[in-house]
Length: 244
Image (tube, rainbow, N blue to C red; front, top):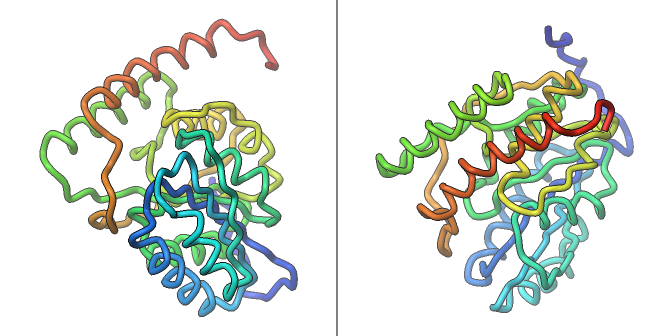
């Protein structure tokens, strides 16, 4: 059962940190960050955008650094190693907020991020995440459905969109700061930790938009890795000692 919404009061120092992994997005990342800053400024709440450029072969890091010079709420973490999970974990390790989260910088609009933050302010002691209403090609929708049904069955999850971001959570949910996946399975690991630690979760329906630019790294091969990875994670948890 979810707690009652918190009263709409201001809390000085109520910093929220959003991790934004970036991979080869130099052509559009400046506009994305400026849009996020404009939307978050309207909320009149202290924030930081922890932008993690991971394994970029373009000048994404330089673009982010230039934008950060005039926007103190933006912080750059540049990584030579790749991986969605690795970038999320690295960003969270640099985040200072009492509330923490991460989002897909290529698909998350300023309006989506602001809406999730409003839910998080109303329910500060739960995990708040997106449940994407995907308008995409049929085979991608079918593959996503199969993966989510697999995860629900394997891990007894109530979540309908495992990979949906933004995801936000309070810092006291420490198990979510101890994730160890470096790949796309970090989202599944995140939701499994919520289940095992009894962290309540709210899913907010959001219409997923087209990519801002760049190419998606999701393909048939990566989809198969997700399906097999879910089975691997299930086996790992079954053989792990209790309390581990």
